[in-house]
Image 1 (cartoon, rainbow, N blue to C red):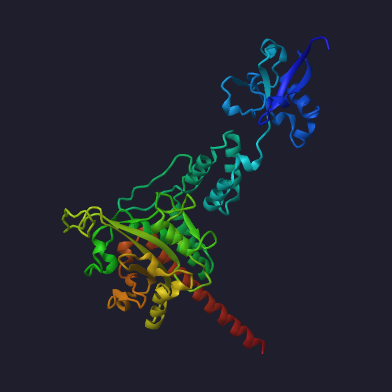
Image 2 (tube, rainbow, N blue to C red):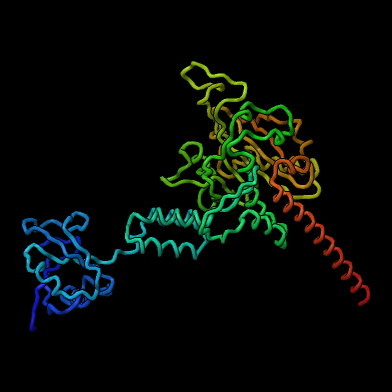
Length: 453
């Protein structure tokens, strides 16, 4: 070699005693040094690594610490060799210093870049959305920061789930760069109701779109009196402000595939809406093939009722500003033209404690200390209020008191947003059209059969 240069290298995480020498021409570039490291005497340590994926750092390390592992985050005097075409002669004066080394940083394995807790969050928040998951993993890797995964996942979820939500003042909330393409997402989901071909798939879409209405009815306000048909409030909690527990402004859901109903209730009632340190979405879809509610969520009632006064007692009382009550809500959806009293009783049975036991939940454990829960049967377009109003409060044998609420044709136009009512009306029209079409097809089949015989 005309201008030989000896470079002392150390693999990050190893001690100085394991430093190795690389003989190279001083006129060569950084990319060549990487290739010599990977294919030289240290090749077994870089078996699955391409030279371009190595990261080299010029560092200064005193020789009096031969046995300690070299960690880049512990070093102050370091410089990353970004330029692959930089000639080593430009580093010559620095490399001749006995305390100067080249630290070789291997690319982090995927499990280090994306730790187990990140994988769990990806599954919980983006489950079933392949392309967003891949894009998020790319963002995490490109961030070049092992702590960046939580920010990357949250930002992706925000862009996917933020959309306009109907409100009483018709305000719309949009975020620039929304991956929904500035789509009015709630209107889109409601529009799906009109295009789905079967009762089962229309029911699935209704389960999702109804969640926006639950937020509209139960979040950051006192529960509308129309929900109990303008009668006396069935409980004093209805005079206080309600909030959907776990609601952050983003429509997030979870189901029995991710957690049990008991885990969901325990997270929101006992663990500040978290499980294993991760936030739990505000709405839960139970097991489909087990009789029970279609949707579960939790409401927090808090603050003063209009006729309350502050007390001087150190213990929060129903009349104190610090009063708080958490109440499970079990929702049953019925979209039908007709509903007999026996069918209504059966529908109400799906949101009562005995049926909840089939989902592994002892409801009384999540209604303490007040002992109440809310059952909400939503039926459209048939009216069902008359079946329920005679029993607005029903105490069950396990000591839990059910507060029975209904939404039907008599109050839905007041309680639901205009878009939701429009979509439900289209569902009704569509069902009638499909029934008429089916009747006509059967008639023609009968005629064809008669002619052939």
